[in-house]
Length: 308
Image 1 (cartoon, rainbow, N blue to C red):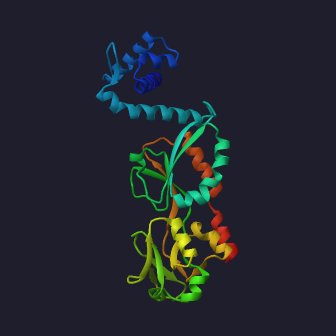
Image 2 (cartoon, rainbow, N blue to C red):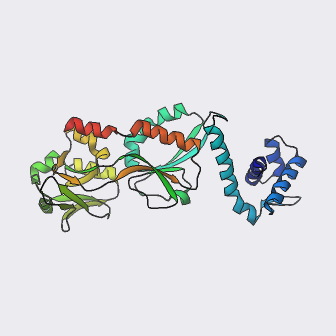
Image 3 (tube, rainbow, N blue to C red):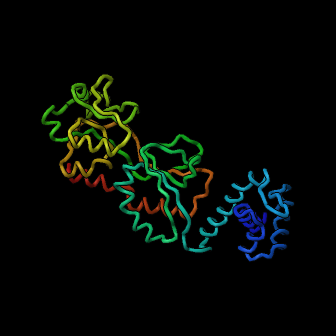
C-alpha cells in the first residue's frame, strides 16, 4: 500500500482540502488528486466526497482514518528503530495520573523532561479518580493496580507497598494498637469504598483486616493528599502507600502502626497505554524518563529505610 498516498489522505482529511494537503507535501493539485484516486482504487472505496465547493469524509473514509494514522505511526516507529528519521521528539503527550502521586514525584521532574525534549508539549489530567484512557484520548496513564482491561498494555514503574500509620499525638491520646483486633477501638481513615485489606502477621500472629468489619471510620475520602494531611493532624489511623507518606515517616510526623504486620497486597504502580496504539517516540521517552527518575528502587523506599 502506498504510504505516501495514505499520508496525503490523512492530511486531506484533517484539512478537508486536497490541494492544501498536496501543497504541504510538495505536490501539485492535479498530482495530489491523482494520488488519492489511486489509493481509493487500491482500497476499492471512495474515501473523500469531492464537490466544487467542499471536500468531506465519506463513511468509508471515516472508518479508514484511524487505521491510516496507525499505519503512519508504525512506519515512523520502524524507521526510528533503525536509526532513521528525525531525532527530534515532538508533539503533544496526553498523560493522566493520580494528583497525589503527581504532586510528589512527577511535577518536580517535569522541568528536566521538558528541557531534554523541547519539542514536546504535555497535557496533564491529574485526579485520584480513574479516567478511561481510550474514551479520553490519553496516550499514557499512571495507575496503582494491575490492569484487567484487554485493550490496554502496562509497564511496571514501582512496587506499591502499603502500611498503617498515625501521628504521635493521636497515639499518645488513644494508645498504640498491638493487634488488628485493637483497631476496633480506634478512629480510622479509609479511602473511598474499596475492599478491606488483609493484614498478615509475622510468624504465628493471627491475620486481620483493615478496616475491620465494625469500626468508627471517622473519615471516608477519595483524595490521598487529604488522607495524609488528616492523618498527620491526628484524626486517626490510616492505610497509605509508602510513596505517599515516606517523607512524613522520615521526619517523625507519622509513626508506623502494627509493624509486625504486612498488607497482603501485590499492588504496583503501572504506566498504562492503549494496546491499539503504536508505542510512539513521545510515549516511549516519557516512560523511559519516569523509570529513570522514579523506578526501582524508588526514592520512598530509601526514605523509609533511613527512618526505620
